Length: 308
Image (cartoon, rainbow, N blue to C red; front, side, top):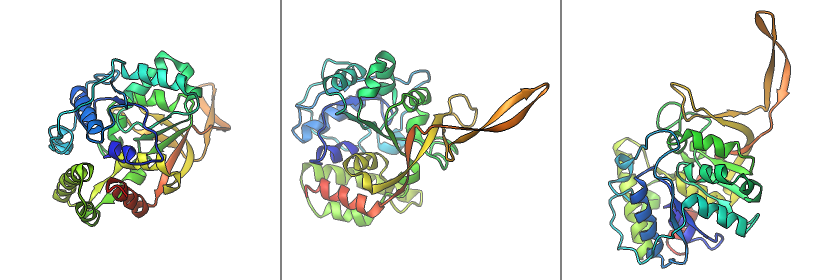
């Protein structure tokens, strides 16, 4: 749904898509991306295969939530578009150097491809305009008590991306959980028709029905909200914080640990113990979204999918 929102929004110039596994395997994700760009007749947009697995851990896929094909079991027509020969991280590097200070990266999955691009060519960091990512939380996780799924699925990659030093906006569960696409919005989507509209309606209905099984009044629009922020940053309010990604905790691996107050105690060793001798400032490395105008975003999403 996030990709379709981007492709249907004139404010955005979608220049490339790189695929990373997460909801489904890399191969299935690539097929999905190709079929979606074909559905909107945008074979001019390069679609690149990327990493096949996280940096250091085994892949976790989420067919339980997203259906066997990651598209709510909706079968799109075979794609007329072809995959580019570029490896995803290489394509990111190439496009950033070709258009310095123009490219905004909007990852809505694990951050493996972007981390690999940074590791291969750190010089892209000051050339990227902004990173707007869907992931993280400062108020508990959805995989477990601590971690959000995109970060949990490759914490080491996420830590690289958060510490890279570029302008970064974190669109996490704190705002995503408030953007529930309920049956009210589903009915609006169902009132109009077209290839994109009908596809998104079927996906949304699957997710709304699944959410109802768990007692939820709608499906949270996590990924589309990140695209929404790229379209209109006033949809959210954000606070500057320093964010680190926990990579070793037994219970907190994948947690985005945010320093809200911008200071850390300075502990100095005196003999056999440490003494607090003051506080040091910690520079923020992210804008963390903390409030969202959910209704305005959901109306934007519905209207764009309807072609308005």
